[in-house]
Length: 168
Image 1 (cartoon, rainbow, N blue to C red):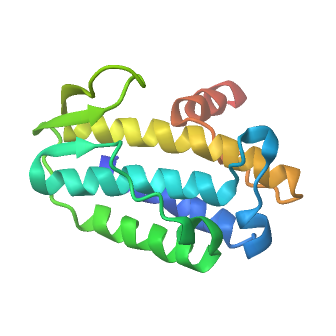
Image 2 (tube, rainbow, N blue to C red):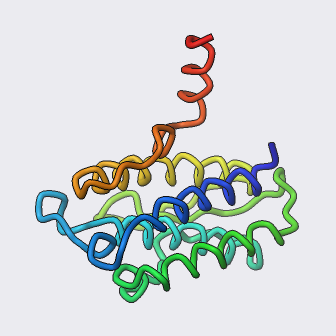
């Protein structure tokens, strides 16, 4: 499957789950998880996708330079619209997966920002993994509020493939 489309479909799973939430459940924060909630996790995921999309223009992806849009964390309609926008931007992207890109990310609070060579394809693979990780946390937060995502939400594609093979 096309990596851009796979990422877009993954984000659209988020829209499906969010359609079952309201502003209260979406913006609720849990002190046990450092005050983050469903909205915070979705904003974080979208910030990473926007960093990727910005990197298409300049050849540098800086995952630390994020918007941290508080409105997006609190307003369900804004979040859904922004997820839709990111999906459309991904689907419209013309990217060669093997094209090189510089990636910048802070690996420690001390020292300089670390840079690394990567490719756009590898970064799309990273985004799948990163999104699934946050979806797993969103699934837990949703269940704690009585909203149950489908059983594949927040589960890695490799795990889903394995489960299909053992179920026969």
